[in-house]
Amino acid sequence: MKFPKEFLFGGATADFQFEGGFAEDGRGLITHDFVTTGDVSTPRRITYQTPDGKTGAVDWKKESMPPEAVGYFDETEKYPSHYGVDFYHRYQEDIKLIADLGMNVFRFSICWSRIFPTGEETVPNEQGLLFYQKVIDECQKYGIEPLITICHDEIPAELANKYDGWSSRKTITAYLRLCQVLFERFGKQVKYWLTFNEVNVLRGYSMLGTRSVDEQTFYQASHHIFIASALATKMAHEMLPEAMLGTMYALSPVYPLTCKPEDVFSQVTARRKTLFFSDVMIRGTYPNYQKKYFEKEGIKIVMEPGDLETLKNHTLDYIAFSCYRSTTVNQESQYDIMVMDPNPYLPKTKWNWTVDPMSIRYVLNEVYDRYQVPAFIVENGMGEIDRWDENFYVEDDYRIDYLNNHFKEIAKAIEEDGVPVLGYTMWGIIDLVSLSTGEMAKRYGLIFVDMDDFGNGSLNRYPKKSYFWMKDFLEAFHEK
Ligand code: BG6
Image 1 (cartoon, protein in one colour):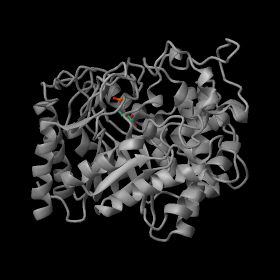
Image 2 (image 1 turned 90 degrees about the horizontal axis):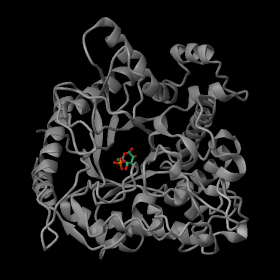
Image 3 (image 1 turned 180 degrees about the vertical axis):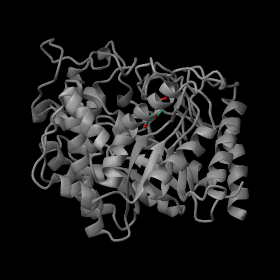
């Protein structure tokens, strides 16, 4: 396996799955704070209650932010973002573990409401900024490049409740205020930025801050995200000439189930549901196939004068993506990226995710052929049920195989196909709470965290077998 000398190899995390520190140092509430464990796609996820017992959108006042807002939560429920795995207090130990592995990049996300508790303050919360400053400084101490996701599937709850989140243009203004502060404070130390995480799968209250999940709302909110991202890109390019701006897309590929021409064409239309987002943000224009789809479905995107120029003039510098698995589609299936259609040629994890190392080479080629910008694989990894011994040691050979086989395919994409790849950050480098299920049981890490689904455990960290494998792998990589 050969990787370029400057290749960035590291780990990835997201604030509400990882940090904890929920009601500390002036942090406001984000939409994910109301998400309980369970399936993300069911309305049960948004179980929140006002003090008078009503359920639905919380209509609190500014002065009732944490810790007072604790009264809004149902004591019988579990809210993963309230505890995470305590990176907030253990960041030094965690970054050291990552550095000891020989990694040179660490992806983490900013909790928006740590910086602007309601999203609408004019002055940022210094304590929130200080936390991320310390994280960045700690990375720098070890020569680790920080890769910052500005917004990972969340929004301050106040913006969601007051404006219906991203369905309003007011959220663009609030987001740009966040970007400006981040670029000003951290721009000298941070080169790689992601404006958003997985924009193509954001839906509903927890992710978009909208109450409705219908297509009209989804595409209108997406348009506002496109504009916000383009304006953030413009701002960064003006303020920080060295900065590289990307957005992250969930790109696990879809294959035609058979070679029947109708099935093959259904793959083309299914894939467009995903690539539409990167088409707008990297090509800088709404594609014809999507305009036709909007016409057919009666979807009308409200735009302001200048929006189309903004998209055209401020496209991204690189494409970032997640790729965990692949799925299939045929003429009959109603394609949905979250649905795991079977592939008879591939094994599956306990969560029914296929294990398909070639998928990553496929996507790297697909996006480079389409966009001719460098790629950054910012999420990949294996969520499995780990077993540990009395010393909390996990022998996760399945994870080692998964990673090793994916790395081989990435190396082929670089070496044999000539795809420029900036780097790779493995998802959930340290065990964290699952996004889709809120479980701890679905572990991705090279580092085990002693905590169970009910929040019990010491939270101590223990390297798994895969940690030592990765360390050897990276040692060899750095020698080249
Ligand atoms: C990506 C998200 O969709 O997949 C992460 O960006 C998430 O936040 C990851 O954790 C894995 O999904 P899950 O549901 O297994 O946690």
